[in-house]
Amino acid sequence: MSALAPEKLAVIKDCMKDGWPLIQIERTHNVAWKTMRKHFPDYRGMNKREAAKLGSLGRRTTLALRRAS
Image (cartoon, rainbow, N blue to C red):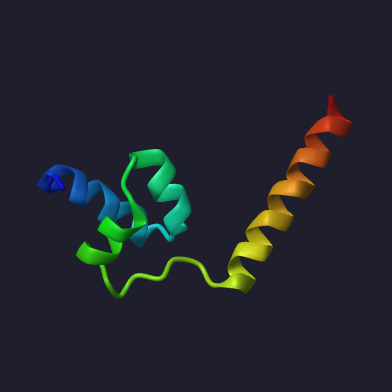
């Protein structure tokens, strides 16, 4: 297991401050969720209601963009 560089930890911490879901941080920065839990045990990301609102907003935006084009 390799240690994360302090710079990468800082970037991940900024993403968490912005409210990114753990899965998005994992995919974007190629970091396992177990590693994130190790370094940031209290971070839980979005709750189910927030994630549902974000998903709904994304779907509505996609539909609006399709209709506009």
